Length: 249
Image 1 (tube, helix red, strand yellow):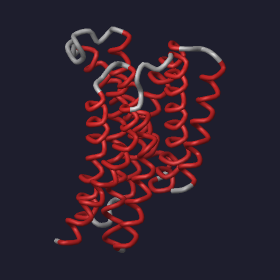
Image 2 (cartoon, one colour):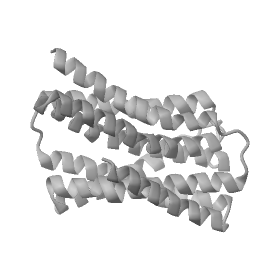
Image 3 (cartoon, one colour):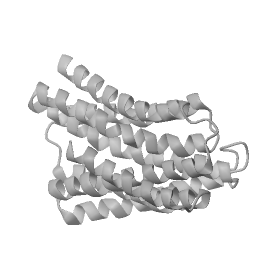
């Protein structure tokens, strides 16, 4: 029971500290220029693309194969589409007007938070199953995942703060997105050897969700703010930063 509790604590801490540290960017942003906001959104988008393409999906292919992973990707896209429609229909989710430009940025952050939370669950599965194999391996994996979650917290916090959401709400949202890591750690420890197909499906699901959000929300909104060269360079720098992070996992 002690090891089970410890794995849950480590999994929860990894998710909360990782996305929470990224969410602290909400306390930094204060009346920035449109060019800076565009660059930040594109940098966040580049991070997400790199994490999905160089980390999530390759891992999903390796664990459960191509077919299962692609099914997960498609399901993730469909799920986020459904969430998008549900949030849009909820007319009072942000000061009563979800179609205002600022409200749209908040919606983007919420959708990205959902995708990150979905991604964090299979990461928690990995932590929990790692603890069943060797305690030191579980601890090391928790630290790596916490570091890995920081850019995801940044990507989530940026559009929320740009949309005018209060700083403490941005930070709290980022923290909440990390909670599924702890839930996944509990499930992973209890099940021990989880079906590789299930993990692959979960990873593909999260990858599809984040790809949809990045391509249909983050990048278009960045271009709406500013279309200069700095935006494109920020996207490239985000991809490079994401590759560096992925290579350290």
